Length: 339
Ligand code: TRP
Image (cartoon, rainbow, N blue to C red; front, side, top):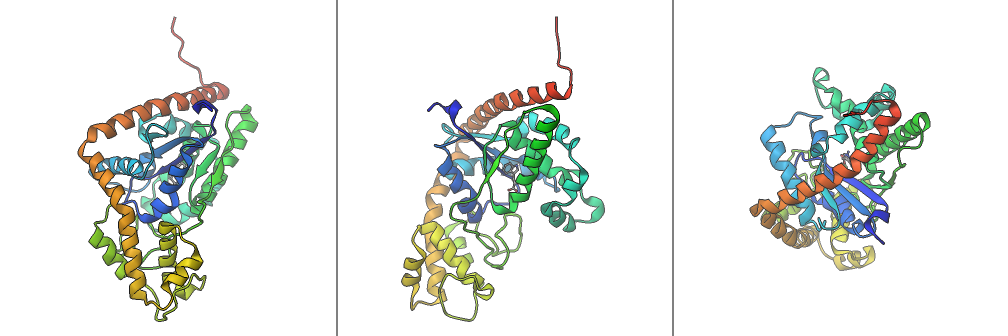
């Protein structure tokens, strides 16, 4: 099958905070698995990061870091298109057009907006935060995307994207492919080590909350040794909220080793929480070793990364501008005509 006949997949990560093992297990690793079966576009969504205040130098550095981590995680630039969102101006342009077709009510009811807005002073909540889903819809719709691999916290944004696409198609004629969400196969939800009842987040600042992909081995091990557990001693997979810490450690171990729950429970039978933490910490350290080695190679010879991003932008632009031209035409924007 040639590239052009494959269905498309699009996903992205914001270059804010440090990518965590949760991002790797729940997203990057899934993407790697998809790059042969689909024509993939993996984007560093820098414009989305602007929805909350960013330090310019930090944003610049993190944008390159995230792109390098895509490659270090196993995404092959010869197979997938890796690019930076702001390099393709069609994203902003379509976002404006779609925002004009979005009822405010659809945006106000987004749980992510409500969460993020409630964490800021009301006067300082930017309009971009409200419009975040419109930009995300533009990312996805510009590529006539079939599948969007994201965590279930993005489900509502995907539903919004489909609603918006349907509305546009209905008003102006069949224009956009309706995308489906692709949920992680393992269904593994990686929780914070300091609070196993909250999802591990790259924007949480509390030390000991997350294990970052670029943490040094001794830091990784220390974070696991300090992980919150409980006062019991059973090491089993469980839904019990008071055992969420142990369950999280086991879930991480399973995601990393690929062993069955039964084998893992058997292995830890009769062992203590100290052993559990040590074993999981070591397994994660081993997982990260090759990834970090590749990352540092890329960071040292920055020219390759620049080249990948330039090629990615070119390829993405080609596809995105085709969709955007159709949209412009359908809604009645006049094109440039030179004699
Ligand atoms: N909102 C996504 C997240 O926080 C990031 C994102 C932006 C995205 N645009 C996207 C994901 C398009 C998938 C497709 O995880």
